[in-house]
Amino acid sequence: MVKHYLDFEKPLVDLEREIEHLKRFSSGRPFHLDDHLKNLEEKLHRLQKEIFSNLTGWQITQLARHIDRPKTSHYIQGIFQDFIELHGDRNYGDDPAIMGGISQFNGRSVVVIGHQKGADAKEMAYRNFGMPHPEGYRKALRLMNMAEVFRKPILTMIDTPGAFPGVGAEERGQAGAIARNLRRMMLLRTPIIATVIGEGGSGGALAIGIGDRILMLEYSIYSVISPEGCAAILWKDGGKGKVAAESLKLTATDLYRLGVIDEIVKEPLGGAHRNPQKVAEDLREAIGRHLSDLEKMDLDDLLKLRYEKFRKMGSFIDEGGG
Image (tube, rainbow, N blue to C red; front, side, top):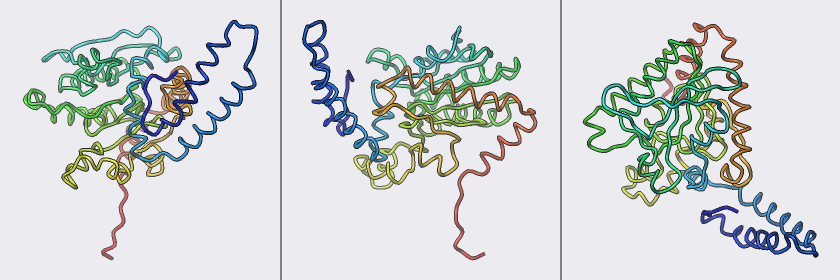
């Protein structure tokens, strides 16, 4: 049973509760309600398909931010083996908003780095809601440099509203930390696969988002700015986030069509939080497939293709005639 429902999911609430009630009521009793349950489940499936086949950009944004959506820690537990978390940037301190370390993936030794939002109120506060400080990005860079030295592929998980904009973060060089990560990731001589698992916001996402392959879960988003931030700038009204979400082209479908990402990893009907184990299995398969392709390539060719990949992004039409 889902713990939290979004506004557009409200039509599902009564049906799912009735199905759950009937399952509990009939369990261990001599009579059965199989036919009635089957009819209700078929009705529920039809309604889910109707709702989730016509989602707007704003509704997908809400799903990407869903409080029950699996976090980086879930995928680390479900996809990788023998994960050893490493801490600190060797300069200022440790930032819990980014977690990373060494692990095993399908028999390969890899470095895993990802934003971590937190699963409950206490952890969310501890993780700063997945908004890293500059020491978080410096920690990520330290791990990526280590990955290059020891020839380990880098796998990143993106899930952040953006880099933390507080005074302390700015004083410690937030913009510079992000810029150094972008520059260094373009030159790292090891395969990099970045996956947007939830919310990919602004430079806070890009700082661990440069990759030879970029994947997105079906109901995740990836954008230069949040819909509310965009609305606040364009219309001086953050409440117009719904309008901005449609214009930003931030969904996986939009970004795949525009050539920004390489693959959309399907989610269960209703979102990743409805079957986290299945999503982890599908993501493992997709990452494994792309990693096998990248590891066959010469490193000089890999860097050349990485450079060309990002140079091609951002097509435009010149109507000036000259």
